[in-house]
Length: 124
Image (tube, rainbow, N blue to C red; front, side, top):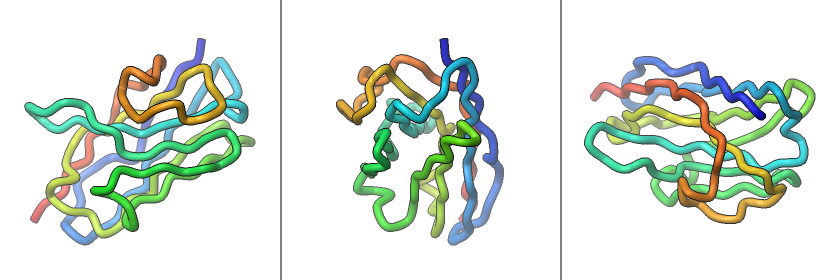
């Protein structure tokens, strides 16, 4: 069973940057797709970005051009580089994975293993 631990969240001003990390244990991530989701207060969890085993990447329209997902299979870690942050990016960010090498979908239901989340707050 894979365990996922997110880190790197915090408070940043609008226009700033943060890099989130998701460290995996219990399973090597090199053969699996990984994803990032976020959930703001009172809202449903939503897709942010995903990366396949072959490093194909997918992004929500709201973050395209600002966020970059990447993976380091040696460190068994996935990253989310977030630039030009906006107040509407404020949310708890979650790392997720499933048992597929490809990104089968961008719904939370398409991912079976989740981390505990890290808070990102963007002030205006």
